[in-house]
Length: 396
Image 1 (cartoon, rainbow, N blue to C red):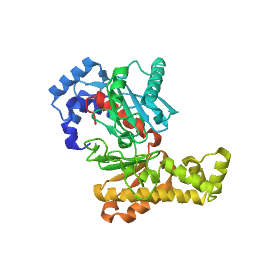
Image 2: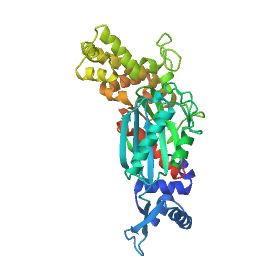
Image 3: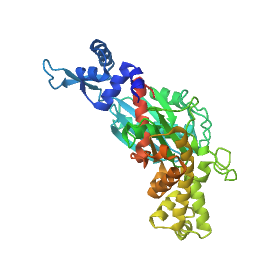
Image 4: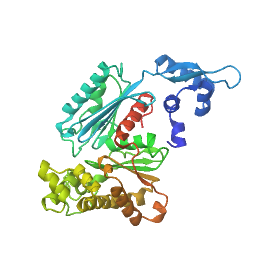
């Protein structure tokens, strides 16, 4: 967050986010850090104490004179952080300082539709409540694997989410759980998570590239998420690379996502297994009847030449797209996350090689391209940040 953007936020949200990120502070420390006149701060604190969002937490260390009283977030604050993937549901219940209380994940098929997925989500949350993880939820943050109208809280024509178009996700969850809800694209919440608690801490101009079932890019500019006026900024998976390429889930041909993603890699690996190019993949196909991206990762570990080439080819394609983005945006860091980031340094090395070769030295001379530090938790951490900022009066 840039200093100007931070200064423009309401005092209430700045105060609550400071307590979230720093823990208990005295009134004097709060006034100093927020650069706020003490009478105004005390009035705001009194209001927050009355709402129950904060509480007093004993005496602070002496600074000379009468000791001040520490103030902290109510330890009973709870947020639900939800990352819906194409093939999974990841949920964490988070306290006011974004520490996980309980976590759960299970396989799920987003194509089964919103009623099935959201009903299952509600069942899991009900089980958490019964087990004592929370008495009430103060906000829910949720990411979905497709374009989202952030303003309206609905998915919009998501290619891999049949039945979800304009489905009122925010409205339904808010009504069912009696709390505010924020809905965003999954790669945006991953970018938010990585910047808040991962390798991109304090990086103001950032690209977070999710490589998984789909491919997308979360964009940070000047310390704020850039979603575009309609919420579809960063949808790089549908940039065309080959006009004679395979048909993509979006209906066009030759998109990056159609050439290299979880499904595309599985398709290429299956072809390599059938034509005998890869003994490792051929054995897997014979044993199970299918070949997946995980089988390619196993082939990498065994030094299979075809698996290595499949991953390098994918890295080349991603690097080509990112080279264009680097020339256009000039980010300070690029973070690679998502399921296929688990392919590791062979993929990362190829992305770097193409990116650095195709971009101007001025744009890449100080540009780190790194793997996500949070890994599969990036999404839930970002969803938790969004939920807390919604509850604290400062949606991103």
